[in-house]
Image (tube, rainbow, N blue to C red; front, side, top):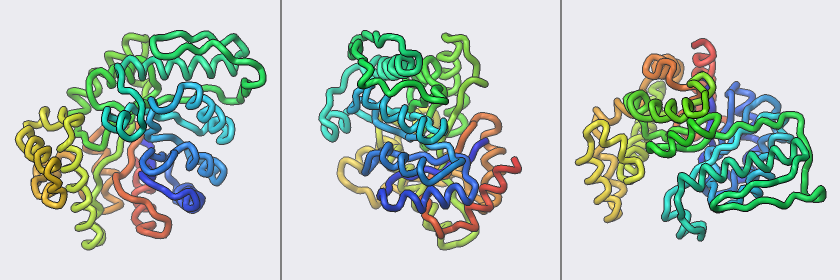
Length: 339
């Protein structure tokens, strides 16, 4: 199991220090989310200031970008990083696409499938020199002159992961992708009984198996070495869990565990802006199911015991800042390498 770190938000001037610290401490990979900035910009700096770390978007929002735009950025990053780049895509929800990005929301499963195929058609064109000829429901790509063709690269296989929560996107992940970003709001039961069967059904359609595919997620971790930080981490986990459980798009986990009443109440509280009170609804059962608690050195063993072989990559849903909790991060990194 690889142990990664994710930057949920960042300032570009901070990237070199974050990346150098992550590589020095021994993380396997570094992901950048698309929250307050463009993850491709941050990863360009990350590629420049690292030599070993795998680097990826977790995630880049797919639909506001054309497949061609995304393909160019991924191709450049794969070349610049010497093959260390992973393209992670996500659909986001309707409101953000329409009201934040200003793009249409249309058939997200079909459009994501076509986006992935179009990106790969562009990469194939650039690597082989064959004509670009991709025609689908949403995109018609048939023009690639030498002036705009970046040409082949040394390591042209760029893994594509997609973020997925519900049945159709999980199946698409298995059918089209090299891996999946599972949401932090998950449980072992959700993975075993819901996510993995749908992923494996998708894999079977193209003659692949679980061994050909990577499951990646973040876990809500509560390190207990320092009581003050432990209290903050628990509060942080409850706040995030309460927010995600209030969101209808993630309701499958609540339904699976019989937490529908809690989820409904959280949704009502969110609509009335009762954000500060929402974590109070996250009881011990929910926290124990969705989070892991132990010392920094114990957490990897706890995660390995809890998930077994379900996961290929994992990170903590905790902020990472160079110089802060480095002893703790080092203890977890060392323990993961000994699993």
